[in-house]
Length: 491
Image (cartoon, rainbow, N blue to C red):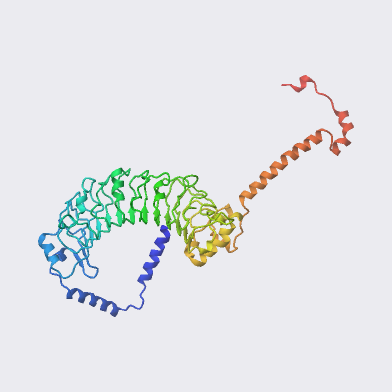
């Protein structure tokens, strides 16, 4: 999948660079327009002398340009401007603490890649328009993250919430647990990232904190060294739509998934989850449409019923699983009505590239023609008659819709076809080999039949039932001479 995305990105870039009738005069005209708009709105604040002030994108970029926070005078000069910059970047500046910031209409504040180890209580209370806050890649600990850090402005009786804050990134810090009331002042939070913090376990306090996020839609818990999840962790955030669990230590599918009824996107990349079979299959997740399980080092079999409870799945990504050799024909199907026909999810995109697959059963999907994307590249495909459907139907169809995905689909065996593009075999340039399994079956049957026939022949011969034996019976008796005891055991 990564290769596909990279190629698409390259094509898009080339497409964007094509000179669609843009002349030198057009470029000069564009430059003059930008210069004019910049001069029409001159800024008096000296912040723009040390940072990049991008008026068009409403952005102040101070990344790698500050030794400390803005001074009081600089904030005042910024407040006095007619233009309100909605985004401020202060990344890569070695800031160590966050003070109480003055009133300003900033919506997106990026403080990542600093050395922030402490945050003053009420640090963001004057930023009432704040929507996105990035505190990733700092030195924040569990003790530094107190609930009142995120308290809003003080009203007549109490502190109001930061009601506009929707996205909070706490990734790549030193957090191992969350205060149970951490999010009490940001009840409308929709996106939360805790990635690359070494939690190892989700304790009761952390579970309580997450339970209070009733509006949460996106949760990133990747690379947290988690082996299990509490079964009830998703009872609170019932509207959760995207869950990222990449790079953890799950050996089985978390049972907590059965409670994420509204989950639409699930990422389980790079986990030591074993084969999907038996009890280790997905629970009923009727809202799930996107599932990604890549770089799974231990999985070699997708068994029956593995995805059968995901009846609304439209995109399935199983690429880069180097040990994956078997996909069961009933991995997706389910008999919902109890009749003679099986039900399948409405798959639109299927990625099986960079695995160790040799054959692909036709019955794995009932409507292959409904797929808009099918990636089967970089597998050791067997170009044999038992794999004829994939070779003679699927690959030509892929070539007609997405030719890029039809290349690098190659035969690995039999030996005479090793390295040959499957598309060439499909076009008739090469002949399919007989299925090796059929050959072996034929050999085994022949051997099994030959053994009793041979024994029967020997028995008949010894008992004198063969014609040749009957004709020479007298001669045999004449020539027969019993060997003595000593001669038989002569050493």
